Image (tube, rainbow over all chains, first blue to last red; front, side, top):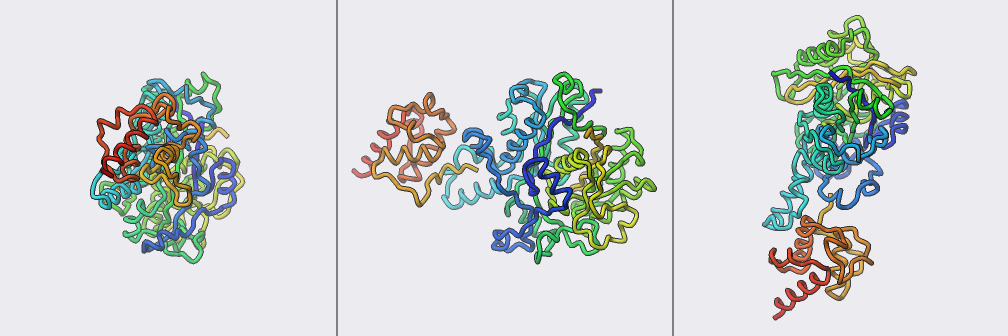
Length: 406
Length: 96
């Protein structure tokens, strides 16, 4: 089996665009959450969202490259180019059968909304144009990215709700470990618009604490009242150690373990047993004991039920080991399809810059989380071994274990 | 994200002549340098436009001028000048 390493990171986040700036935001506990006036006008229960600022894809992509890219595909393309630059890997080096693209994505709601609205308004499909079909497919980010980078290997999107990004990384890791690919551009994307989140809002899952948007969400806090959606893009360059060493690449981390499980229980309520199995399996694959994990990046979104279930699962798995636990969603909101990839990236930035991010908005911790070492303020020590949790609707679970090389 | 059917901004000057209008449509749709959009410019070789772009040209012209283009006719157009002539002919036939 090939060892799989991370050699590049690219992000488009509500915390910023450049890695150092995002690391600083994480260290300082800044929030990227705002009130979206459009969602207010649309009658949302909650207009809160993570906001992407100063995003200019035309600075990196030509008109022809952008023409069939909707919002998620643009995030994928920009973050991939940033990740390749971070990895010092040329686009030309990817035009091979051993190079692929796997992205987590589970909606193209705005593109679909536009096509449907246009068809109704015109009474015909005649005006939809050449790009609507590609933009309106869930695999739009991966197909656009493969064409952009000229990869000739894997090319697909993984749709697994809020675990999509983590499963994409895991699948890329498996393909590299088995020798089927030697480099995969992998990660997750999440559109940030009202169409993508209206159904979620209708479920009543979002925080309605709108007086000061940066006070939400509140993972693990007693008075948490729901999640806040966010999004953007997170792409990592994964390579076999052999491939990375052959080109003299800087190694950001080794992917030690990936595991998946399903609750097989309820569409929207997590059970906990699936999370336990997933974490234990990921540790076993990584050949690490609970006591060897130095940081858990929790899935915790700020929902009353989800955080308590995850806290109990973490406590069961780690017992007396009690590693530091935080959810970066208190700063970013829930980046949904992208979260499994972005939170791996955020954790690696903590390792690189030597800190462990705190749980923003953690006022009074929920007694149900009493068995966890919840990070209350930034700790000036970067983690070397990391477990990142991602859990999604339908009870799909993904856990990734990394060993950072700061 | 690039919506081909609405390439115009309300605050921009709209040329009085059809060739000028067609050129502006092409510039706006495809982010072209206006200086390159001449009557003799070849769509593929000079402006780097392909068949997908051709779909969007047709839609933009139909939206702008209110005619229905014949697909077979439009796909045969090779230069910007041929588009000028095609649009002028369509408008003339409608006027008559």
